[in-house]
Image (cartoon, rainbow, N blue to C red; front, side, top):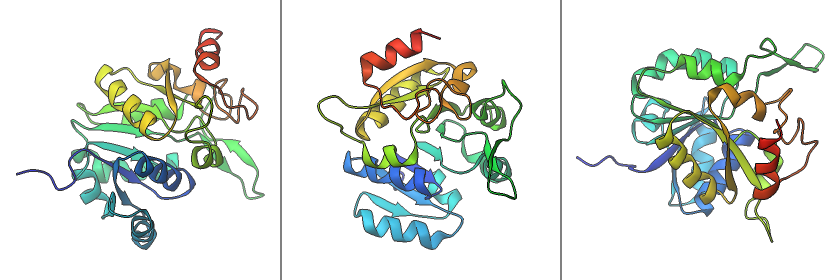
Length: 223
C-alpha cells in the first residue's frame, strides 16, 4: 500500500524556521506535512500553502514522510524523542537547532558546554537506522524566509552529515528551497554551523553575511 504522502518532508514545529522552510520547499515543488504542539498553527500554515502542504499530528506526520525536520528547540527535541524514536528508523532526520536559551532577563546564553554541538546531542538521541543531518539552521530565520533564489548567485545553506544517502537527499531539498548546498563535513563539524560560536553560521562568524558557493567552499576550507 502506497504511503499517503510518499516523498514528503515532515516539518515538526512551525515557528520562524519551520514556517520559513515550509514556504521555501513548497515554492520549490516539494510536498510537506506539518505538525506543531498547537496543531491549529500547523493547520493554518498548511491551508495558506495550498495543495502541496498538509497538517497532521506529530506521529502521523512522521509516519507519512521520508524526511523529518525537527524545527524545534533542543530541549523540546530531547523531550519529544522518546515519543517518536520508533518511527525514525530508515528516515532522514534533519536538525536545524542551536544550543541557545534565554535567561530570566531575556539574555541569550549557551545551553551546552563549549565543544559540544546541538547536532551531536540530537544525533545521539536517534535510533539505529536513522540518517542524521545538520541542516537548515546555518542562516537566520529572516534570511531563510526572504533570501531564497537570490540573484545573480544563490545564497548557500551549509549542512553536515556522515551519511552519503542523507547528503544526497539534503542537497535536493536545499536546492528546491532556493539555496545552494555546501557540505562542511560530518557530525563532528556540526558546531561550525551553529550559534553561538560557529564560524560558518550567518549570525556567528559570518557577521550576517550571505555566501555564494565559491565563497562558502573557501570558508569551509579555511578552518
